[in-house]
Length: 267
View 1 (tube, rainbow, N blue to C red):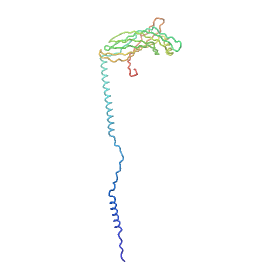
View 2: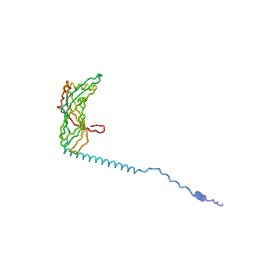
View 3: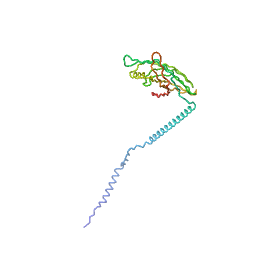
View 4: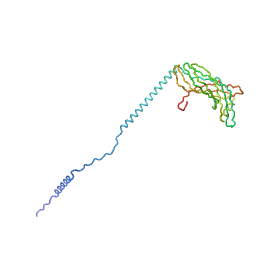
């Protein structure tokens, strides 16, 4: 029996494979390359903004530091200058005294409507300002005088004193007429009638407002500042007949206060 020879399948397969590969390579000579993947957008850190913020903060800190330092230096220099002026000139506030007060008229009559009363007054007051300083002089504007009842602030009259200059160690005296003719409400009338019945008389308060300019040593001049002089412990009774009554001013005392105005507020 003759042996049959079969072709090797392995060789045929390899050849077919090689032929297929070659054919594929020849058929696609320009194959497209795969595109790289696009990376997601990531914002870069803003180093410039951080640097700007840090620089702004440092500038603010430097500005605050120097401002506070300059303020402290100015305050220290002002304190030193004020102390030196006080030691050299020994400044004192001006003094005021009510030396006399005569009541010429103090009438309170009811109006026909019964809802109010009419007040008519006339006072003659003598005021003595004094400058106790050796190196300070005062230039006063005109004074606005207001006399009122001390317990209820009912205004009893208004007057004025002309402007004047008070030199060092100066003592002078002024007279002023204080009058009013006004209507009072029921509450004010009731309070004033109660004061008129007092045995010791009506307690009164005299208020004087003005502005003053201070001259130190004859050379250094200040700006005008407001002052208020308040005199209390004054008592007087309504006159009987045509003769004026004399108020008691022996125990009166006057206090001088500075009045500083900042925008709408006065202190």
